[in-house]
Length: 217
Image (cartoon, rainbow, N blue to C red):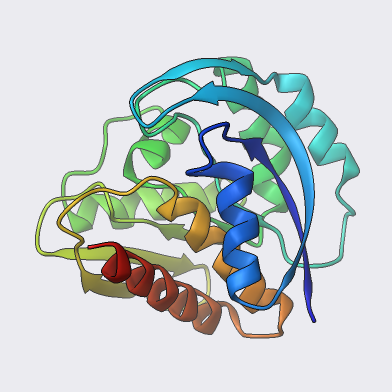
């Protein structure tokens, strides 16, 4: 059985964060090794409190080996209800210290905009430009998730420095679900830990999350 070190915040409602990561890895027959970086008090409707700082980001960065297993970085900056999970100093530390260590960065559309200090991408051309800008910050690959876009498809963009843009498309779920971004990044990590190439790990993870959403609809 493959093992995945999960470094994540704890969602007290159980819908996202570390709980969702561990659940996803269990479904994919991977062993989760959890590390808690933040404790939140939240529900589907509201983030009540969170304890997270830039010092936590720096500690995580310092603990990662310079070389070693793949690193999937899901920059969860706000909760689904809109509450801030990482302040400005924490975001700056993430960009400076963690992003360059990432094998894959997996922001959604608002997170990509926040990391770049710009507006959210409004079409696929803008998403491609923002993914390229995130690559320029040091990530080796970017999967810019399309769940926050409009339209009948949820289209995720995988961009690397040495391959053509690759769009992963699936029918959009009629209702938004919490924790899907967490599930996607955890599933990608499971695929990479099992030895899959990056594109195959992303495709497998996309299929897993799509099936998860179909089961809930």
